Length: 63
Image (cartoon, rainbow, N blue to C red; front, side, top):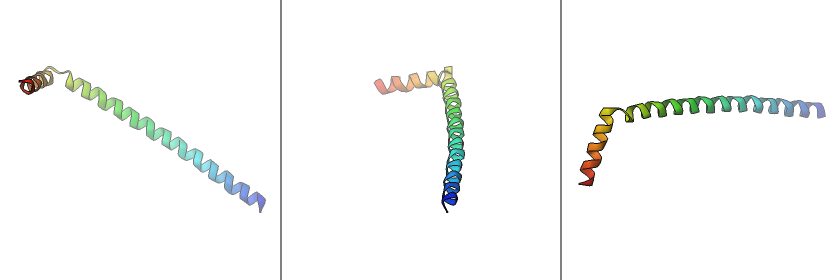
């Protein structure tokens, strides 16, 4: 009976460790996606066309 409890505990701990690795991988993919999106957003916002449009919008708002 005691060995059975230990085996159940061991199996549960081993399963939790496997899930922890999956969570880490999911965080890594999410972080990579966020960085890629930030890079794309930076590229768009620093383009001449968008800067001109934003300057015009801010200029109209301040009048």
